[in-house]
Length: 148
Image 1 (cartoon, rainbow, N blue to C red):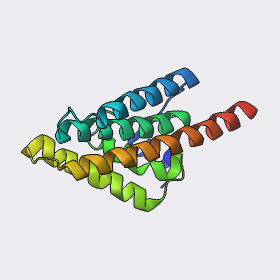
Image 2: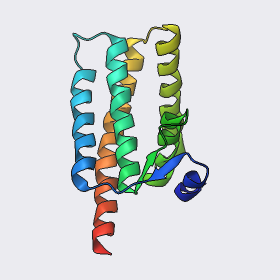
Image 3: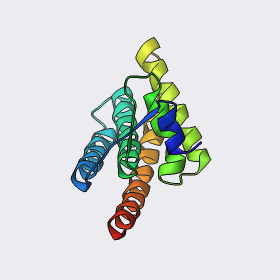
């Protein structure tokens, strides 16, 4: 399914985003990753901020491509994660892993399931990798856009 198809079915909304807005999201992701490795913070919170960091990457990638999720519909986190295949040409195995973190976050938030230290660490490492990939991908997207 293309990003335009996701607009047609109401999952995405076209937007105009400038470089500054996109950079603010990436800087926020960096700040969250600082907290994600702070040993003074519990694993649940470190996981939450690592999750937030990779979501900010997904949102920034959508914005660089001219979209945002439709916040009025449930599942906008899932849409942002799954769109990474189109926005940054992200490998499906990474998308599956990010979606597993989304499900784990939902269990933690709505059932109180604790997050293990290893899970918080893994989410942080994945978020850090995605941030690097996002920075490179967005730079390529914005360069192509400005060269048109």
